[in-house]
Length: 204
Image 1 (tube, helix red, strand yellow):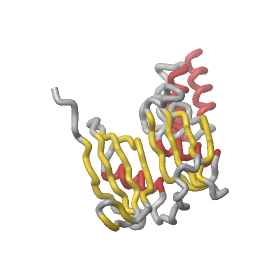
Image 2 (spheres, one colour):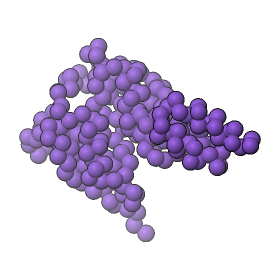
Image 3 (cartoon, rainbow, N blue to C red):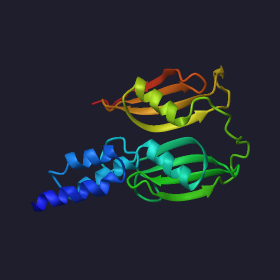
Image 4 (cartoon, one colour):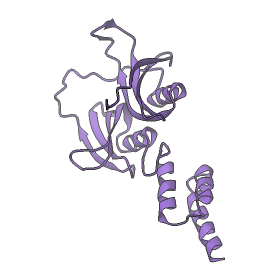
C-alpha cells in the first residue's frame, strides 16, 4: 500500500511534464527513488536516451530561452576546462543582432553562461536564411545514421578549399556501434550525404 502511494505521487508529479514522460516514470517505478525522477527530468529536458544527458534539442531549447534568436552551432564538450563537467557550447545569433556564446550544462540543461562574442571574428555575418532548420537537420541526420548527435554546425559561407558548394549543416553522430560519423545535410533540400566516417580506432 505504501509503495502504491509513492508510485501514484511520482506519476502525478510527472504528469505535468507530459504523458510520455509520465508513462516512462511509471514503468520505472519498481526500482523507485531519486534516480528515476532524475532520469525523467532529463528526458523532459531533451535527453537522447542516456541517463543524465541532455541532448542537442534540450540544449538548443535552453539556449534560445536565454537568448532568443537563431542557433547556428551546438557542440558537446565532454570535459569543459572551466567547469570539469560535460557541457553544450552553442553559437546564437540573437534577435539583438549580436552573436552570443551560450554554455549549457549537459546534465541539468541549465544555462551556465551567456556572453557576447569576443569580437575576434569581425567578419562574421548574420546567418543566411535556411529552408532546413537545425532541428530538421538533426532529424534528417539521425534518420540516415542512428545514434547520438554530438555536434551540429551551419556552414553557409558558400565555399571552401574544394570550391563552391551549397550551404549545409555538418552533423556529427556517434553511432550505436561507438563509431563517429560525419554527415552533411543540404540546408535547402534536406538531402543527407556522408561527409566522412571517422572510424579510426586504437591499433592494438
